[in-house]
Each structure stands twice: as structure tokens, then as C-alpha cells.
Length: 392
Figure 1 (cartoon, helix red, strand yellow):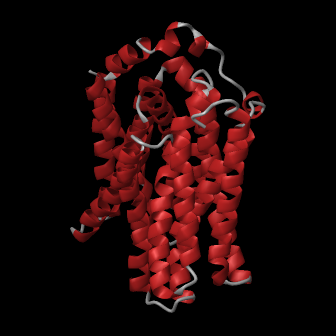
Figure 2 (tube, rainbow, N blue to C red; figure 1 turned 90 degrees about the vertical axis):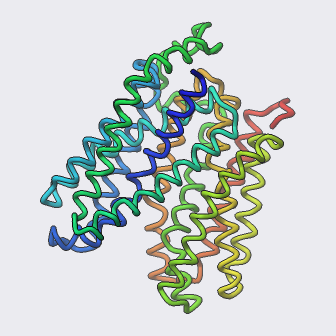
Figure 3 (spheres, rainbow, N blue to C red; figure 1 turned 180 degrees about the vertical axis):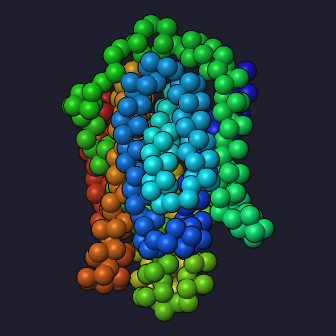
């Protein structure tokens, strides 16, 4: 039963990644149909991000009231309904409205599942599960491309993903007894410690190390998303590569993350979470150092940055129960997810302004600043939560 539930969680993580890249792949066809500027995709993205932040902050309250299984099932259903809503939308306003349940559902399932895996499974599964998210994010554009190439339109691309999410919702509903059995059998829940009242944001921030880990997540996602969004532009404008070649180079960053997480799962057998995070930060630093040295250096740099990013996110999440306690882990992971989404939402556009008014050549400096603050905050967090703990 334990392994069956793990398989369901793996499938859920693939499903979690499927919609994440749909808007970007479909927007070139969508904005023309709606007669809006191409930049309007940012409005939809911002609404989704706002929803994920809100639902992440409420994940502790929802999970303690309903349980992880029910929260996951309801959240996936909300996402499925929102995707179906996208597929039948005929105006930009309708897309914005459907983006609300889309974001709310995505944030809840992300925070709840991450906490569940951190509590019940080894670190290697966290790495492999986030690798599965990458698989889903990679499959999404292919499904959309299949619909567009077949003349079915972007609507059917969203509908295909919606159907997959509905099937997953049914699977999750039938699997609810497994979730309940696993949770009831957890040592941490039998003594009543996990039955405490949900923590408010103010209470969470007062926990030693909370502010530092929030900044760590903010900086990590700022670095990852800025690299993903601006790498191609840097290669074209600074290195003089063609747009096609630059796109191929930039894709290696995402390949580095996905393959890196697959290999990270094996490394966690020998290394603990803190060691994995420091190793990843070292690879990121090495990658940034290579970026200024021609096209070959940039190619190698992007691969190294991707490999470095791979273990950081899942390892910080997996270490949360150990550092902050199982009774506080859902609340902490919720604010970590919210901090991550804030970094994702705001920091890539900030670099866009810098590139526009200063120069695209400061790209490595911007990434280095994010890395330095991330590393400093992580070490400061460890100094507060790992007193007299050899494993830290």
C-alpha cells in the first residue's frame, strides 16, 4: 500500500507540471484570437501567481482540517476545472477569471504534497518527484503542439490536459483510504502534536530561522526563473548567437535541472540535505563564473547552473520537518512556497528593467547577487535551527 501511494504521488507530480508550460506554448496563437497585445500573457501569469501565494499561505489550515489526500484531490479538481474553463474561453477577461481557481488549486496541491513527502519519504524521493514535475512541464508543450499541429486549436490542448487532470482527480478520490491509513500510522500524529491549531503568518515569521528560509526560497526562485527567462536574450544580445541557437542553449538549463534531480536522488543516499544544498550552490557559482567566457563558456555555464539548481529546491523542502519540527512543517512549507512564488513573479521582470536601462551584460552579476544572498540566508538559518546538531 505504501508503494502504491508513492506511485500515485509520482503521477500527481507529473500532473502538477503539465499545465505550467501551457500558457507560454499556446499564447502565440491565443493572443491573436483575442486581439490583445502579446504582453497581456503577463496579466494572466500574475493572477495565477497571486492565487498560488494565497493558497500556499492557507495550506497549513486546509491540510489540518481536511488532510493531505482531500486537499490534493480538491486542488487537482480545481485545476482541472480551470483548464477546462480556459478551453471554452472566448475572451481575455474569461481567461483572467479562470486563472483564479487555477492559481488557488496549484498552490494548495504544491504545498501539501511537498510537506507530505518531506514527512513520510526519504530525501531521494523528493528529488525524483521534482524530476517528475520536470517531466510533466516538458510534456505539456508537446501535447499543446500536437493539438495545434493537428489543426485542433489551442482550446483542445487545454482540454486534453484538463481530461488528464480529471482522471487523476478520480484516482485521488479512490486513493483517499490510503492517505488516511498512512497518516494515522505516522508516529508524529498519534501523540496529538499535529492536531495543533494552524499557525498565523505572524506566528510563523517569529519561528527562529523562518525569515531566513523565506529569503532563501525567494532568492532561489529569483535565480532559477531569471535564468530560464533571460538566458536566450543574453546569448543573443551579448554573445551574438542566432535566436534558434540561443533557444537550444537555454533549453540545456532546464535539461540540467531535470536530469540533475534524477541523479540527485542517488546522491542523497550518501549526502544529507544540507550537503546537497551546498553542493548545488557550488555548481551554480561555477556556472555563473563560466557565463562571461564566450559562447562555449555560456553553454557550459547554463548546464552547470541547471545542475546546481537541481538539488536546492527539493533538499530545502525535505529538510523542513527536521529543522522546524513536524508539527510546524506544513505551515513552514506553505510560507516557503509563497516566498518562492513571489520571487518567481517579481524578480525576472526586475532584471528586465535593469537590462533595458543598464545592459543585458549584467546578467551574471544579477544571478551572482541572488546566489550570494541565498547562500548567506541559508547558512544563517542553519545557525539558528541546527545548534548542537552534527547532521547540520
